[in-house]
Image 1 (cartoon, helix red, strand yellow):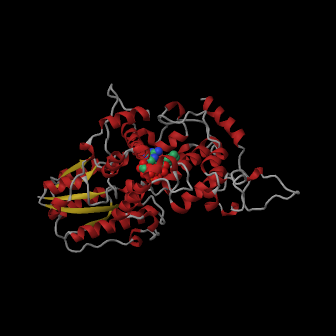
Image 2 (tube, protein in one colour):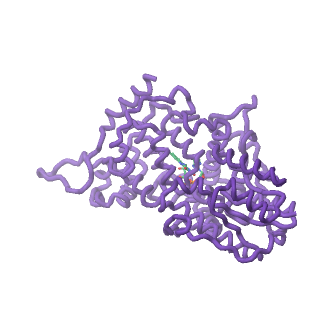
Image 3 (cartoon, rainbow, N blue to C red):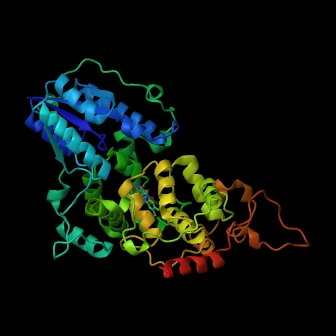
Length: 461
Ligand code: FAD
């Protein structure tokens, strides 16, 4: 029998559920990847994620070639290309891993239907999470909508079985020998060859980043909230595209123990928490998790929105955060919380606008995590920040970037200001009638006034 292994958000050749099952069940396995036009057509030419995928695929291809096989890459709509490839290679089965996003679920159902007409079956497996769908439920069989009890249940259920890897090596001989396959260039795909070397794409990059992080993991608990410090793992883009294995990551953190590793494992559990919310409540993609907050009357001032996107609100920590996002595609978690809160509670703009902007820009954009994060910050989500707790951008800045080191990196026009001045430059007093001059905007809103307006907006509801 011949099978296809269809790679999507799992671009690696180790500990891989679908590949493991394909290799075990078939005599010949052919690895395929589709550059799906239904996804690509919505993206800008300079999208970093396509470059990240492309470079990660190059590694995957090289690893397959080292085994005498190759990666078959097509460029089109998955619904057409997968059945076409199945016919071309006379495959009786296609193996892949679950994707929990609503659009992907529809796509996979369509592909399965198409394949069935030619007598080919689609087999799909859990791979990108430790626990999925209904695996962690409340005592009464419901979905958890509060994180802490979810996490408690998640940890109670965890054992070696769920962390065991899906071995690939013993079966590699079953990869079909293939003549050299062409790989479409980024230009042919309609994208720029953006330099993504700092993201360290591919399996090798994911491994290097994780090994580096393991040396620092004991400090994670203390360092993770400070954007100027190298305190976090920077693995999110690798988790998004599956160049690392969640089982390996969770296993190592679980075995290491200690406060740093435990806190980090907790973040991996947040990731699964939002995945299961999206699975159970796919309507969160358009709507507030809390229906009473779905239609808040946000004024949605487009000029404020533009200033926020471009990093010129006059609030240094917010502007530095947005410039980091625009320049690198990454934003530190503390800054995501600050920038999101500022958009919703200071600029009074619908969280969905910000969610969309992040979705366009983030290298690690993940529908479940991004939607969960935004709804958390906007106080419209499950287990969200209560609406009356509003971040003060200046005190957040003083607390999490005390020396202004991060601000200086992205707002060089403020570099000369002292650590005391840099968080709220509009407060600097003139000495002998002279204020330091710098080319930086005045704040576009008054936090105290906007806070009151936000409270009224939520309360009126
Ligand atoms: P680490 O601190 O090293 O954490 C390890 C991993 O845990 C991350 O890679 C990620 O996979 C997961 N994780 C950590 N925090 C969260 C969280 N709050 N929710 C879900 N998973 C988490 N994360 C994304 O992966 N994609 C997104 O699109 C995304 N959008 C966000 C939007 C907002 C408004 C907010 C507040 C958070 C968002 N996050 C998102 C979560 C978090 O900010 C990033 O995962 C984290 O900053 C990535 O850096 P890291 O890999 O160094 O994280």
